[in-house]
Length: 342
Ligand code: SAH
Ligand code: SF4
Image (cartoon, rainbow, N blue to C red; front, top):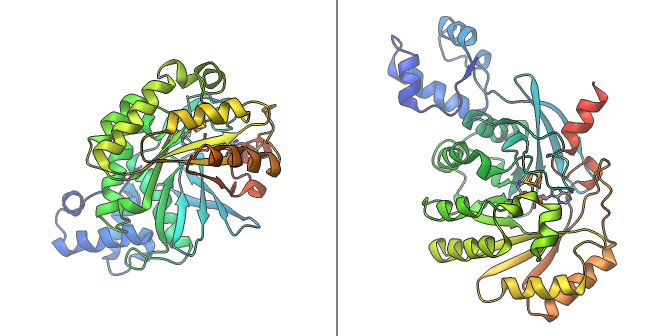
């Protein structure tokens, strides 16, 4: 059934032909609050019945949650007959939701659980918004008094492989309903350099993260097959272009994998690549995935790599790997649930 969340008031008015105009606006507000039709008691019963028979309000519902030691809470959502995952991360500066953009992923990075079975589906605008609205409600928020203030598009999937829906989502989530400012939204891409350039001109001003993970083409191609389509130089040039066009500092994500990308040569080349424009390197220790043989470096080894970068004047930090204890890395929770319930 078609979902109503994400439709404009005008589109809802068309669906509600024959009812007073204010009903469409009421419905619109209820949808952004995360209410189901039965809870929209100020709408006529007969109208609610009509809606229930023909539509769903939010195409995403919370199936299970898992609280981790760090305070992060992992969400397993049901959508249609599939599952998606997200993570809610409370911070003192505001609460963040990490959401998924696809079911699975076709990029095939060797360290990631999301790409193990390839791409199953692109998430629709309603399913993207649905994750935000469902968690906001679950955490006690409404559209007017939001619980979620920040978004990161870093769950399962490659956002730029679902480009049109993701851009429409950014428009709606920042201008309608919860009105989450694009300043508080980050998007992470595995390196579709052509889309980075297109996005730079799109008028959106989110923080762009680029998953670099290796500074040499031969190494990056081994762990990220997308590197065959867009090499490191093209990618870094597109990042510079993004900075020039938007004025926003670009973040390079660098997942440290033991014995693979944590050498001094890697640090030196990473420093060379990131020199001369406003960017920052985020180091993350690998979240080990049971289906993959790759290992995480120790805390000390990660700090040693950070030290090398700092001596080379690279702006860098180690990001806590959030939710490792709750299968935090993208794609792991959905897989475990599917395995256990197979
Ligand atoms: N597809 C996009 C966004 C989702 S992944 C991308 O690849 O950028 C979000 C981040 O988590 C990316 O930087 C990704 O490389 C990283 N990641 C994926 N699997 C990981 C793992 N097992 N351990 C640590 N980081 C991982
Ligand atoms: Fe896809 Fe990102 Fe995982 Fe690579 S790291 S397989 S692009 S979700």
